[in-house]
Image (cartoon, rainbow over all chains, first blue to last red; front, side):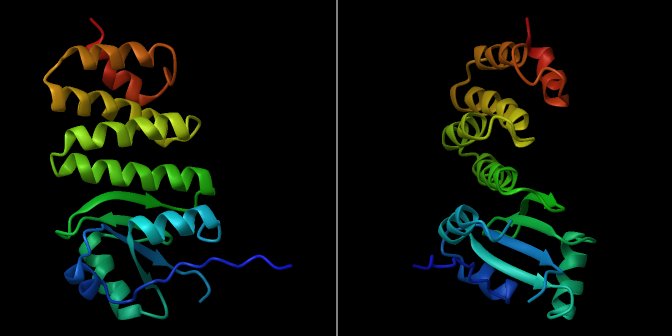
Length: 35
Length: 150
């Protein structure tokens, strides 16, 4: 049996995410992690 | 820290996650890095819907410490909106849930401030100062609260 691997669904467009809102704060990750 | 399923759940449920990658999205990294003065990776910002930064996490953290910092960011966002009655239990929960994190003494300090701001009762500050006499007494937050200990 395998366990489902959870991953974050990252958005790439800061301005669009900010404008869309949804009432949630943005978590902005400045990253150099392997993609 | 982003591989921990608890971290994934908190971020997906409570934030809109945006990744700005130093190589894959270099122009955006440069533009937003300048706007928010982010000079290092990983730098994680919690940004309110009005575009204001409310909390900053620089460098890698183990999952529990990172979760505590995310909770601190949400509590600070409520405080910055002037929602002090909402902020108080958010700060208090950090102390209860992550008592050994670096975020805990800061959260204890702001628990007292939020309670005072919500109620106008200065006794909340003295109560917080006394709480620092039994825990986190060697932190800068205990020093800041010491002025309330009368």
